[in-house]
Image 1 (spheres, rainbow, N blue to C red):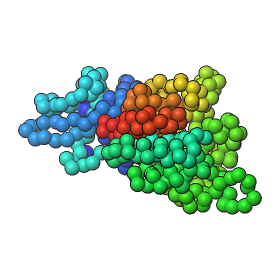
Image 2: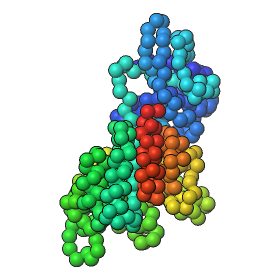
Image 3: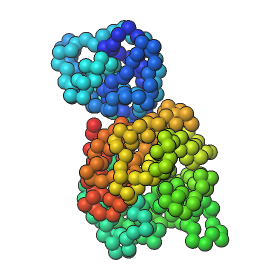
Image 4: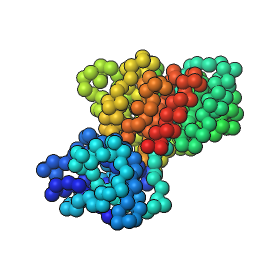
Length: 369
C-alpha cells in the first residue's frame, strides 16, 4: 500500500479496506497526543482525485474514516508530485488544514458504495385507485435514478397486492408498514410474515415511532418482529429515534443506542446485511421541523459507532442508515450529502409524486459524490 502523508511527525489514523466502503478524500484532525476522535469533524466525502506524477496518470483516493474500520500507522512521508493535481474546493480546503492521506488503488478498481435507499411510508393514506395512480407516477418519474438508488414503497395493507403489480414493472421494492411476529393463529387484526410474502412484499418496517409512541409497542415486541421477519426472509427497516424532551435533555445518542441494542438483540452479523436502520427524530416527523444536516450526521455517526460496538467495524460500515423527519425536495440533497446518511424514510412527501421523485433523484445523485 502506497501512502503519502502531509503531516507533522506523529501517528496517523488510516483505514483498512472493507467491502462497500467509500473511497474518498478526507481530512483528519490530529493532535500531538496522537488522539483522534472517530466521530469528530473528519470532513465529509469530497470525491476522487487524479494525480499526474512523474509522467504517469494514477488514480488515488483517501478513506473517509467514518465509513471504514480504522487503525494507527506511523508515517513520515510527505505528499509528492503535486503538479497535475486536480482537486475540488473541498479537497483543497482539507489539504490546507494539513491532514490528508492518499492511498493508491488500481485504475480499474470500483468504488464500493452503500447504495442510497429511499423508503416511502404512506401510513394510513390513499385508497385503491389513488394508491395505484401514485405508484404509477413514482415509477414513471424515477427513470434512471433507480440505477443508482434503491426505493421501497410501503402502502397500507389492503393495497399491497395492487401496488405490487405496478412496482414490479418499475423495479421498485414493495414493503409493509408493520407485521406480527407469530406465524398464524387467533390474533385478530394482525398480519403475518407469510401473508406479506404471499402478496409480494419483501421489506417490512419495524418499530416506527407511531407504533412505539401512539400504539405502545415495546422494544421487546419490536425485536420479536425483527427476528420473525428475518426468519421469513423479509428485509427489515428498523426505526429508532428520540422524542423532543429526550433531545432537549441531551439523551439523543443514549435513546438511539438503547433502541438499537434492543431491536437487534439476537440478530447475527450475517443477517445485518438485510437490516437497514432508519433514524427518525420523533419531534421532526410530520411537524415541518427537520434536524440540521450536521445534527442528523452526528446522530447517524453515533449510531454507526454503536453498530461497531454491537458487531464490528465491517458490519457498521456496510449497514445503511436512513434519515426520516420532514425530508422534502428542498432539503433532501443537503441531508443526503452527509457521509453517514444513506437515504431517507419519507412520510408525507412520499404521498405526492412531484415531491417524492425529486427526493429519489437527490438520493441517486448522492451516490455520484
